Length: 346
Image 1 (cartoon, rainbow, N blue to C red):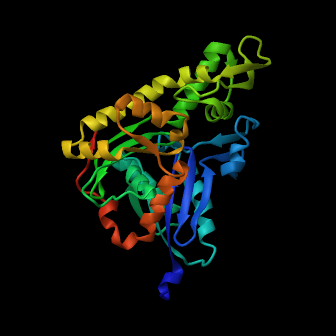
Image 2: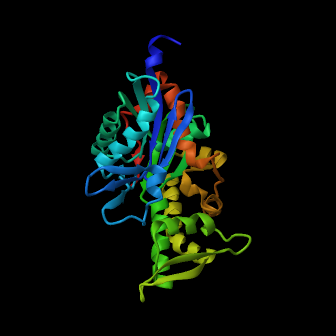
Image 3: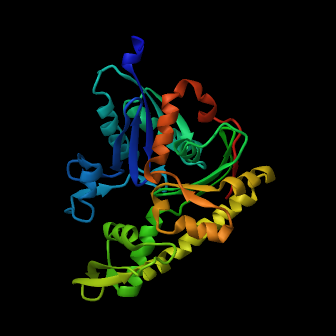
């Protein structure tokens, strides 16, 4: 180890709508927290971050607000994003007050220059010295251990909290991509609306997430399942408990799943023929928390006739890919900045 390397740290940051993960070179994943911050609106001071802020969702007095600073994969509240990043970057600076930090940060494929600058500024203002941006699908391919630099197609569908990133990658670059604002948050909102319409019951995000992860599915399960949930009766305003079945949750989610299927179909149709053959041979890889929905890859495989599979540990796939890039930051300039933009489907 050189003398100067003691004062330098390379990290990977997956700044997601739902969760923020951080990878430190030589250490692995050191942060895996919800992208949430609670703020005292009277004093303007932050109260809690991550899991501690998550515990407060829907349970705070009027002067405590739980903020999600990213919406649909992009920064909507710069100051709160900066606060979250500073909180986590400070954990990395434990060895030296003068540590030089370089960071590889994941961004959506369709990010605008303004949104890109916002990400860079937020990361720099948190205490990072240099920022390298890496598109989320490319990071997912790295995390899955696929051959990125070879002239063959790697198709990945990364379904996060705010967006679903669909891309075909070959020779270290994105050939065709599409970004959808259909992901975990939209799943939750559809469940909330379904419960409201079907049961005349108001529930919050936390309950909707519990429904999604416990009995949510894209295909029927081997055994029918149900879940008891509580909320506020819209007529009386009083607490009420109902039983929701997996088939009902599926009704709420199917319109969004169909949208994802059609977007994957559109992406394949715009892919060059030679790479399309590679996709048929190698299949489609799914990453991100949204891909954990029961039966989702199997349903898409049935609809498209292309083998679909989840990567190992979909929740951490992108940050592991960022970590891979961070470990080799000096030799991977070709994947951080592409002068030729991929085909982006509207």
